[in-house]
Length: 268
Ligand SMILES: C[S@@+](CC[C@H](N)C(=O)[O-])C[C@H]1O[C@@H](n2cnc3c(N)ncnc32)[C@H](O)[C@@H]1O
Image (cartoon, rainbow, N blue to C red; front, side, top):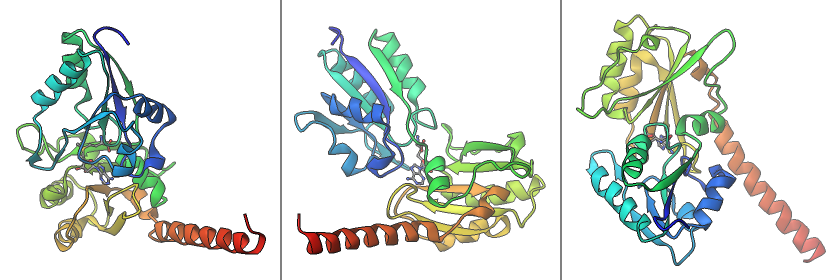
């Protein structure tokens, strides 16, 4: 380890440990200090060595636990002790993950670092509920947007907003559904544009709600969310298949049942 230690900025994926890349797993297993986001699941944290120092620096919505400045300082302080610090972030560090702010801070303090990608929540949701983010002839682009900006205002000037062939995925935006619905309708999107609302993508507890742009705000208001939420808007989301997650659970139960039957029949 270099005298100044080293920081791995690692994407944890959106939830369950089976979304981790092998690179992320290796980095975690070699962690001496772990600074993790609030959205990182317990089963992923359990993969780090027991001796590793584990500090939650994450925030959920407006509930700030550790400021960004404090997180930056902690990373540097721990690395300067000569440790391998893993900064574990939900999803992909490059998507609304403030990773560039952290890299710049590390550069300023002469700390070596590398970034390991993760599965972003939109990709996990698309796989889990079997819809595409782009689809030949129907959805030619996908745009990731956020309803939360540094100054608290939402900015919907992106030209994909009005493009009927663009898929839009909104992160951190459920509180802004009314504004998003009105802005997209004003920009000329059809009221019948399919929408999905996905909570806890990539986890067993994932929930899918479907509807149309004209009732997006109502759909969001009607639900109470415990976990993180994505909003998907565009024709590609019409392909979302509600039953897939339930089917998967059935397959798992069936597989367990079959293996128990085999064990009972043939022994160990
Ligand atoms: C600070 S952003 C981080 C995004 C993360 N870097 C990624 O690539 O998924 C946090 C927001 O991502 C979305 N998000 C993260 N994990 C999610 C999940 N498992 N299901 C649905 N949305 C999720 C929510 O909109 C949440 O408010």
